[in-house]
Length: 418
Image 1: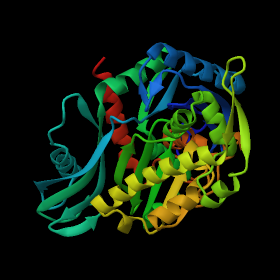
Image 2: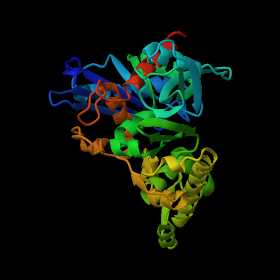
Image 3: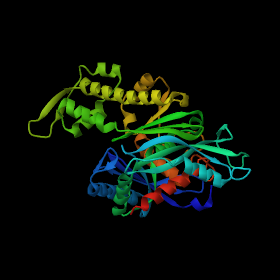
Image 4: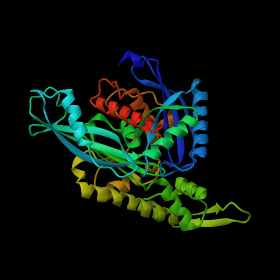
């Protein structure tokens, strides 16, 4: 790996709807990174991944940062931050240019990507990422690297991600008010993919579904490149809210029931028919007895709705052909009992639960036990992106290095608005 990374500290901040997670790491002599500090705090002030109360968001970030700093023994100055939310949109686009010389040059590649991103956008939306998928040279399909090839006509297919300017600004502002500069911002499903997908899965074709608190973030990789992404505004908080409304209990109590007793397995629900729990409603004499099969039935209905939405996406864009390696579930929602089995049944494909650092293509980084959970996929993935290290590969060695440059452009675009 590059010597410029050795000894450097990197910080990742996952600003989620339900939690703020801060992870501090240092690159060691073995060519991997070592976790130095971890901080987490309940997230207040966000809804569906978007800041709705900046003051409380700042305080949540500050608290998580202080906890990580105390464990690591260093002060955080800047960080890599994830972004998601219902405002994120994505689609594929193509561009075509004439090759100026006999061989395709970097200038030709830059021009064809500019042509592919020359599209009209809704008011308030700007391009966040332009990620090349493949090229065509004089009609030759699926060229991954066109530089130096002979031809007269160059085409590019790219994956474009757009987002609301205000939402990105507010995330950066909240971090800066918490005393931390933003080094770069990263689309969360791309970070989660770095944390839980193997290189073999990326090449063969795989989907990743990160079920968070406010949104579920979906992406498909094929030939090592992202092919499709989608943010669906149905996630863990919707599951909890359904229980709260359906049973007439506070949201916090509904969350406790979901975590302790919730399942979406039919057999598990059947076993709960004769099981009951008393719920303290938070006021004197306020106790409600709940048949445990009822919240689980509610959870199953919502889970089936979530997977139905993805099934519709598969049909509309013919995505299943790009996923021979199946689907990887991650995020806090993946921990709900029976989610893997229900997803496999509804989607008709192999499904596994993705843990941070669980890829096996290279030596695993040293991961504290508390991070070995789908809940921390985005935070850990942000570190993988920040350091550029997957297994024993550094950023200079990965064939997705071009994506790094595009992320930098994204950060520059956002700062231009301040």
